[in-house]
Image (cartoon, rainbow, N blue to C red):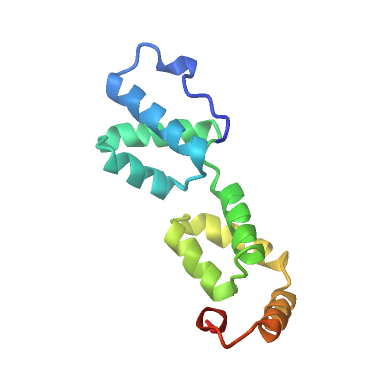
Length: 140
């Protein structure tokens, strides 16, 4: 679990709904990174009003708790290095996560240039050659 301050000074004397929404958002962020879109979805599903959600998103952005560029970089590295995604599957995963179009347009080309997809593909082919393809799961 990440270390995130869950009771900042700004909470004293605020509307109860705003305080609960901020605390909820900080709890979400203590477990995982979120895009603005996903955080809005989580807070909406928790029953908070749109005006409160906007204030919370502003608060999180102002303090750097939501940093889509940093999150996009780490998400791409994870998908490419650990899951061995190619460019198409990576783009689909990025869209599914809800990264903003501006962030993706600014950062993606630089991120993709950091990885050698041909080498990754060679590694996967070599791994497949060594696998026992009589097993259905291995073939897939």
